[in-house]
Length: 261
Image 1 (spheres, rainbow, N blue to C red):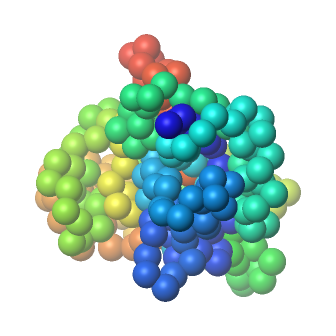
Image 2: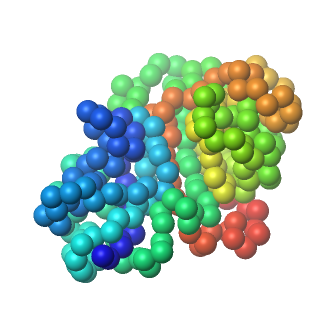
């Protein structure tokens, strides 16, 4: 068996998320179908992802791995996969990995981007690729507030209720926001050692409410203390979220460098 490490990008609009689900179109499902076709295998070949993405969430650099029953050059595997995958998924990179490599358990960090469209009305051509916020925003307040995300904290207030993960402590290395006047968008970027279910979308929701004056600038610090998801309130839509990059010992975090990009 040969293990492949594959980096993929996908438009999440027409997927029910990454993880395999019965009678649902998922990224894992279409990847496994393509791999099985190449292998001409009568049985399932499991494609393991670096993590799940929800329905409607996109990826620029999701990483997966799978074990293949015979040797195929990485370039040939990339070409074969792209010839079989639907147009809303593309393989960007393919490597033969060490047999012990695991796309999920070997991660040292992830980077997410969240795009917010600021027009008063929802742009029909961007509704599947951005979140939308029509209210006034003080971006200086948001920039100040984002600094409170940096460091190691208990993110219980920023995790969707009902999750099975008990340890809610995570470390955020960078949290930034930039304005794109040409598209009238705010672009958030978060880099951390791991993220809880809906965590980035809740963080963006809190930041937007701070920018709109609905919360004090440093309300994030209070939310750490109360550990109450209901007090974080707003969850930004899935459509604006992108998994940008997954790190495997190759990011600033591994050097102890807490950077703001």
